[in-house]
Image (cartoon, rainbow, N blue to C red):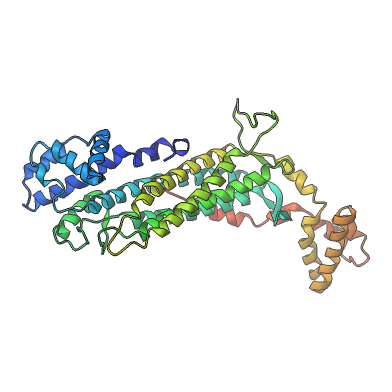
Length: 434
């Protein structure tokens, strides 16, 4: 994990100290299961439970000799037990420990991500309600479309976050598995009862059919959910970047006291947080692809996935954690320039009301094609020659709408008359942290 983009809580989950502690817990539960079944002496299980955590630096030094991380860990753990060290790792293969521990760590990581998504959702929902009736120009293809509200734009973000939350919650269920089934998953040396004992206490489910490992489509699904959440954040970030452009100027990222936007140009106030999130989302998609590549392993296993997962799982969950917290700060402190939004709406010279006029002409008895051509002709005149669409239409000899009805087509509030249904749906949407 890169320190610049790692927050303490997620870094602690994936830190080596925590990893070795979970390995020890798996080993301890296995030995307690053997003792419970009368195979191993109870005092050996008690001694392992009381044994100190394996020192990270000592483990690294031992691995330089063994060239096998789990073997080095088992050596040190067995040496630290006061009695019965020979029972440590009894009946196990390395993947029993690694994959079961990873099930624990992945669920802890996703639990933190679910909390972060819920926190961001709450911020976006609050800002959406705040700007429910803040009128602005809607844009499609980067071109003026029709009036909308800034709150409606934010509502689409909130609902997308709710879907991200659902995907992550499902992915958590998918990866919350472990396996204590031996070298090729046959339970030849460790019965299913030991696996059930261990996994029940860790809050995991057994892989129904495990080969030597837990199946990696599970990890790929998690990384896909993480990448999709990152894509959502990128959508929000790109919108903020566009709206902060000098020519638009409708929103601005929060700018802290003492912050500098440029080493050379003191006037600069750049959307650096949103740009950062855009970049992180690109990495998350790359980690998802790496997860797909790990699904197809040789026979019952190889270790081509190992190096990938050591990087992809901590980094992907860590980067999303960082991006979620950053986006929450951005949205919470987002400066919304409602005057500029209204000025930009007025700068369209009424072009954004073209559909309202089109429909009014149809209701007045014109064919759709005839009505379209009347409005389009005057819209093009407005684009090319100036004036407003209202004035140009009023001067058109084919325009037979009464002037009061024509003016009613140019009221922005009419475009927001049904947004209440969206906010009723939003009010009924609630996320929990898990």
